[in-house]
Length: 127
Image (cartoon, rainbow, N blue to C red; front, side, top):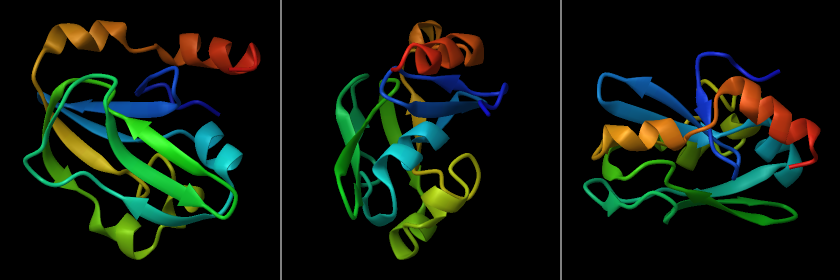
């Protein structure tokens, strides 16, 4: 089930837009593909990232997944709960399993994100 209130990337990150900020996590599809997540490396607070740049790392028992910045901006918040309990990403990828919040540098980039319908299409196509 793809939540309808979010935007997505082809790399399986989700974005919740909140007053000029973007809360970022990985999708249910991504966490299922990775399996049991055992470690999360979050970006440092204050770090500026460019759209498409590696921002975080999520490691599972079977793979390492890179999380790319879905938008350019500055990291203004990280989720310490997922560092302490990485399995939150498996249990609640769209809620408590969020990773970081960006202060959006260029709101035009939002238009490059996938709509829920487009993301569902990507999943159906085997993406």
